[in-house]
Amino acid sequence: MKIAIIGGGLAGLSLAILLSRQDFEVLLFEAGEYPRHKVCGEYISNESKPFLQALGFPFEQYTIPEIRQFRLTHYLGYQAQTKLQKGGFGISRYALDNELYKIALAQGVQIFTQTRVQNVEKQDNKLHLQTLDQQNFEADLVVGAYGRVSNFERGEARAKAQLQPFIGVKYHIEADLPADHIEIHTFRGGYCGISQVETGKFCLCYLTQNNRVKDFKGDLPAFEAHILGENPYLKRHLAQPKVMEGVTTSQFYFGIKPATQPHILTLGDASGFIPPITGNGMSLAFRASAELYKLVLAYKEHQSFEILQKAHQHYIKTYLHHRISQGVFLQNLLFRENRLFQTLMMKSFQYVPFALQMMTRKAVGKDIIVGSL
Ligand SMILES: Cc1cc2nc3c(=O)[nH]c(=O)nc-3n(C[C@H](O)[C@H](O)[C@H](O)COP(=O)(O)OP(=O)(O)OC[C@H]3O[C@@H](n4cnc5c(N)ncnc54)[C@H](O)[C@@H]3O)c2cc1C
View 1 (cartoon, rainbow, N blue to C red):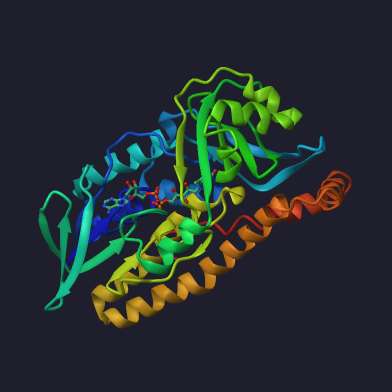
View 2: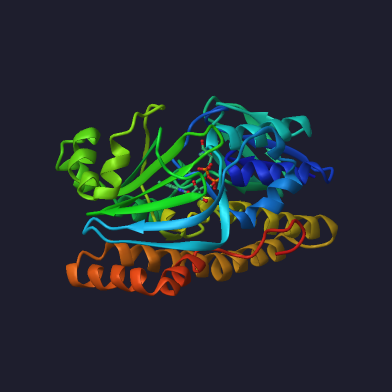
C-alpha cells in the first residue's frame, strides 16, 4: 500500500518512520529543506520521550537539558515559580527535524524536499497528487501534515487564521538561566518563553498580537525594547547577545480546523493548533502520529476508508479538541488586560504554588507509547 504524506515536520516525519517499518511504501513531500530553523519554543514535554526513543532519536549524541522548574513572570512585576510534575527537555527544531529526516531516509521513506504539493484529487479509488513543479504522483492514502498555515487551507479555515492576527518570533540567545528552568514572561498583548536547547544556548520565542508590532511600524527590535522590555525579568534577557538571526511566522487559528478535503487525513497542526503557552504542540503532533499509525494498520488489515476516517475524526473531535480548549483557556488568562484580574491571578500563583502547579498540569498529557495511547 502506498501512502503519501504532505509536510515533513514532526507529525509527517514521525508517521513516515512508523509506517516505513511496516512495509508500507511511503512518499513524503516537504516544501522546505533540512536542516532549518522553525519558530517554536523548543520545549518538549517528557510525554514525548518514549515516543522519540521508539523512533530511534539519537539522544546519546546530544547534551539535552532536562527541564524541571517553571517560572511565570508578569509585566506588572510579579513572579511565581513551581516544579513541573512531568517536566520536559530542550532541543532545537534545527536538530530535531533533521534527525527525524535522517532516520526516515535511512528507513527507505522516499522524501521529496523543496517540493510543494499543490493539489490532491480522488479518481477511481486512487489519489492523485500534483506538485507545484508539475510532478504527478499516485497513492492509496494521503495524509496532510502540512502544519498550521498551508496552501491546503480552504474557505473557513483560511478565513479564521486571518481573523486572528498574531505573530511568532524566535531567537537563540546567550542567557544567564539554570539549564533546568523554563520561564514564561508576559507582556502587554503577548508572552515569551525561554529555555535551554542542546547547543547550550537558549531559545527565546514569543507570540504577540500583530497590531502591537504595527504600532512600531514592524520594527521588531523597537517593539521588543518598548513592550517586551516592560517586563523587568524579560528585559534582562533581551539585553543578551543573539546567536541566531530571528525567524518569524504569522497566521494563527487556535482551535480545531474544519475538514475541507475529506480524502486527506489531517495530522498535527493541520488538524488544529494549540496555543504555544502549553509547550505541547510538538507532543500533540507526535501523539496524533501514534494514533493514526494504529488506525492505518487496522485499515490495511480489514477496514474501509470510512471507518478509518471516522475513527480519526473521533480522535480530533474529542481528545485533540479537549487539549486545545485547555490551552485556549490558559492563554486567555494571560491575555486578559484587566489590571485587577492580573494582579489577583499572579498573587494567587505566588502565595498558593499549588494553583500554578494545577495550571501547568492542564498543559500535559500521558506518555505517548507507539501502539497505544
Ligand atoms: C510561537 C510558537 C511557539 C511554539 N512553542 C512550542 C513549544 O515550546 N513546545 C511545543 O511542543 N510546541 C510548540 N509550538 C508548536 C509546534 O511548533 C507545532 O505544534 C509543531 O511544529 C507541529 O508539527 P507539524 O508537523 O504539525 O507542523 P510543522 O512542524 O509546521 O510542519 C509542517 C511542514 O509542512 C510543510 N508544508 C506545508 N505545506 C506543504 C505543502 N503543500 N507541500 C509540502 N510541504 C508542505 C512545511 O514546510 C512544514 O515543514 C510552538 C508554535 C509556535 C508558533
